[in-house]
Amino acid sequence: MVDLSTTASFKLPILVSKRSKSGSRLGAQSHAPRKRFGQNFLTDQGVITAIARAISPSKNDNVVEIGPGQGALTSALFDSGCAIKAIEIDRDLQSQLRVMFFNRDFMLFNSDALRFDFSELSETSNDLRIVGNLPYNISTPLIFKLLSQLHVIKDMHFMLQKEVVDRIAARPGNKNWGRISVMTQADCEVEHLFDVPPEAFFPRPKVQSAIVRLTPRAKQFRPQCSRVDLGRLVQHAFSQRRKTLRNNLKGVIEDATIEGLGIDPACRAETLSLDQLFDLSEVLPPATI
Ligand code: SAM
Image (cartoon, rainbow, N blue to C red; front, side, top):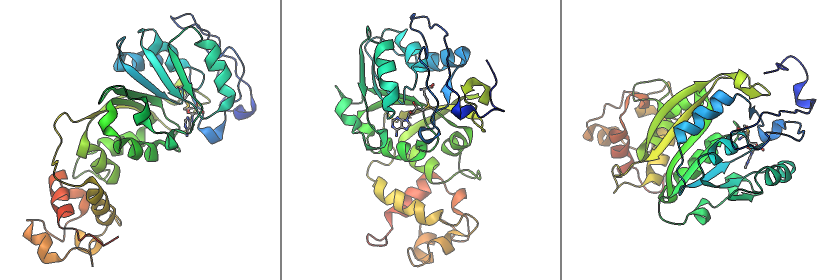
């Protein structure tokens, strides 16, 4: 791979002409990567193949790709014979993608994934297999949005900043255990699959990336508990990480109520298990936010 990281790479058009197994030409047209759309295109064929293998779509899967870009991952996924629905915000990439996949079962939406109603793509319940090398600036809000649409999702595979994957996969007691770990693990199994170095992309990002798989739990955990209340509780409990639970929940939940749940108000939220956080969410007064 050519290293252009020391040049003004965002201004340079790129021409990548590797052929995928399906025979389509990757990035046969030039496109200057756009920073505002978080465009760090995957160029390492070994990494692309490893991601496609991890997803391993079958012919009848309802695959949805967020941000197909120049089609690197899309091509590898098509090798399995599945149909793909893709959501791409950058209009300039649309015609290129349509040409690349004109003979494939490919449906392309020119939309912002943050505003997209994913349930529209669902054909049967829990059928969407969502994948994406996500732009770093939208990854957290997008994950929260998808967590609210889990009833149509079978699984999700994302390339994210490694730091974000570490937070999503963190366990109680770890400094990374916080809002995104709690809200994701409340309803999904989380697997940190593998790390991806900056050299696998063009242009190279400044940070390490990682692949994470999120699978909605077959049997919902604490199904009687409101996820909205859990979200409100977590926002309070983790608002100032160095402070005690007592301080963060001041004026919201009384010490005696916290103690009544068998929780020490002098602890920090990052030491609490998912069960204890659910317990606290159940005693949260309705009108505190
Ligand atoms: N999948 C390609 C790859 O792996 O090479 C491109 C990945 S690139 C990191 C992110 C892609 O998401 C870009 O194609 C970008 O235009 C697109 N994108 C950025 N923001 C988006 C949004 N809000 N909705 C949909 N697509 C978006």
